Length: 587
Ligand SMILES: Cc1cc2nc3c(=O)[nH]c(=O)nc-3n(C[C@H](O)[C@H](O)[C@H](O)COP(=O)(O)OP(=O)(O)OC[C@H]3O[C@@H](n4cnc5c(N)ncnc54)[C@H](O)[C@@H]3O)c2cc1C
Image (cartoon, rainbow, N blue to C red):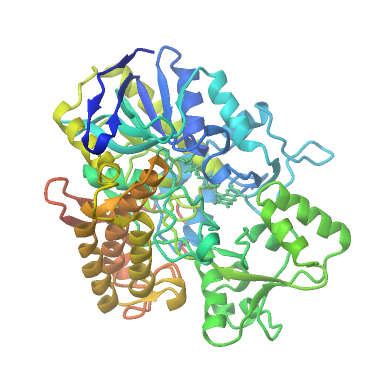
């Protein structure tokens, strides 16, 4: 791999920015779930291609899989087919999905799961050797080491990895994406990675809304706190079309520890109960589908119980025995060890008391929900040379680990073919100088007499706006047009502060860019929330001024595109296409 070291350029306040230029064939942004499978697939199918991963953290323990996983949530267990999967996902997402994307990802579940099993992932099997299901679409794994297993496969495949390097923007030429820039939080260099194609796989966006926990525990969020929407923001700034940001994800999680509840609800069959001990989903919300209702309704039920004064809300585990308690703890140790520590430190026994649950702040993700790049069946975005996979890609909810793997594989196959057909194009050099200034400006500001604005101050302001005017947890996730217009107005004022933002060191600089990215994502999100004048996914998107689902007018995708020159956001509507026949509302 050719690496040329270009001259260092002197910048103000004594900070020197060294540049390093890397040339590769395919650049993958984000070495997580989707990124790792994309990288290995590329090296397997196109061994002549150079593949580089730019990863903000360290690939061994980064992103959603950092703490491990105990189940693969999307798998075709015996008797299921891609078509039955599409029907279920369509039902679970209240009638609106990109069926082409959902179907094509499900066709590769088996391929990906078997591959990762060969790399060393322990998957639980029964006495006949069949995978042990956990619910209709899940299989159980011992996935504490899942991320190091993926990372090793990537290294073994000969992929170049730039760890600790934060991607900041795409390099473009005439509407074509030809690489990306990033800065290292270890050596402070600006990396200019020139590529023939780019696959973005940076995950979704946490930290747009005020988190459940505050102060020292504020980053104890459900979603990886370092996935702050960089890939979305880069696409927004470059003018890529985005879809379905308004389908926010609100997770039902254990109180305070914020651990996933599927491990309990599916693992030991624990129903939700309220403070009076009522199984409210089966009674008060039976007309919506009760315990089998689409996932948004299973968040909406407990929210209404809390709002109407019937909290706290629990998962009732009092029927389980000590052996099941042990297994439950083992399952959490494979994925969310802090839940076990939390129980131990509070002397809590789930066989004696029910487990209290709560709803998280909203996240923007294309894996549990479908916010992200508008892509075609090859996972190509609307920008030439740019492909998207995993939580950053839109239109295909219910992706989870295996769907992200599948999208990484599909994007890799398409990007590899594309690269073999095109010539390398040089990015705009002037633009790189401009990007260097944008990236390092907050460091240059530090030490000037004016003390400046810190990233966490802007973060608090952003989260306050989103919380109070765009349906945060303390507002029971509800919103109306008047509130969203206030959110739009306040968000529009934020960029005027950004010239004053300061970073003390490289870690601080990373935090600055996280907040800059989140502001771009929040602005687009508010426009999406404003545009959909119905309530399609209660809790995820509750419009109090349009409280009903309106299929006649709104069974379609809301998309957006920000003009890279003017910054103006245009809203677009794209039709829903039913490819798999059957009732839209039956699984
Ligand atoms: C707590 C939790 C539990 C879950 N449990 C399950 C489960 O049991 N089963 C299941 O199937 N699914 C589960 N999921 C969902 C699943 O883990 C995700 O959908 C999937 O891992 C997302 O993959 P991804 O590749 O899109 O993102 P990630 O795997 O998060 O990868 C994104 C990568 O991009 C990097 N990155 C971010 N910003 C930048 C930047 N600016 N520059 C460079 N790199 C960057 C990140 O560091 C990260 O490595 C869970 C998710 C969470 C958060």
